Amino acid sequence: MKVNLVYLGDANDVLRTLPDESVDLIVTSPPYADKRKHSYGGVHPDKYVGWFLPISSELFRVLKPNGSFVLNIKEGSNGQRQTYVLKLILGMQDQGWLWIEEYIWRKTTCMPGKWQNRFRDGWERCLHFTKNNKFKMYQEEVMLPIGDWAKKRMSNLSKKDKSRTTSATKSGFGRNLLKWKGRARVYPDNVLTFAPSCSNRKHSAVFPKELPSWFIKLFTKEGDVVLDPFIGSGTTAIAAKELGRKYIGIEIYSPYFKLALANVKSVKKVQRDSYD
Ligand SMILES: C[S@@+](CC[C@H](N)C(=O)[O-])C[C@H]1O[C@@H](n2cnc3c(N)ncnc32)[C@H](O)[C@@H]1O
Image (cartoon, rainbow, N blue to C red; front, side):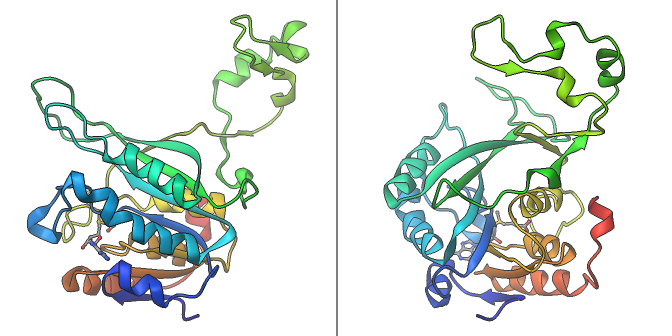
């Protein structure tokens, strides 16, 4: 299979030309329903699931059995919240996808705004799907510094803290704080805080490079193949290239295709250190 390239075309057609079980990770942000009609179309919310399911069926075919699919998406509101994302999840489960997790991308610096019946959207979904319960996941690659709270808390551990204790709330959760004493890094939670990208004004819906980078580190190793079937300005390919992964992108709109090509070309070499 050819890698490290961006195709100009409809994802629904181009995906059919890719071999079975050839991709390690799919990270993408498709057009959301009814959004950005003037730049690259916008599928009606009622037709969204019907539009997307043939594409997710092809994604299922090209993904390796131990691979992952991360879908960044957010439904809009028209008086009340649209339900097409919820219906899409159910439709994808019918196709055989396992819905493993919902990560929340918390957008830190959104513009302020005023709505009649709600507040500004400050987050988007990153839905994690797989084909199997056993999939590649390298949790150590996304660990975080333990933070200052640990210095004080860990210096004064009670007897209870030093053994596995079950939560007093009867939630079933257990913890053993002693396990984390002396550690410099801890596992993150499923809320990812990244500022929306403001630097790429030539595309109206760019996600920050940190978003695909985080999932690329979590679900792939160097040399693995990362696919984005709605590549836009090329962010996923840039992240993959910088992290030493192979990439495949698809973009239907010629100006964005050219933009992606130029952006990816400008990434000269693997810059691992900038992510560590
Ligand atoms: C939300 S944007 C992706 C932005 C991208 N994540 C980035 O950071 O630049 C979705 C992209 O999908 C493209 N697109 C829409 N329909 C498509 C299709 N059927 N096949 C391939 N690309 C499509 C749009 O032109 C748009 O650039």
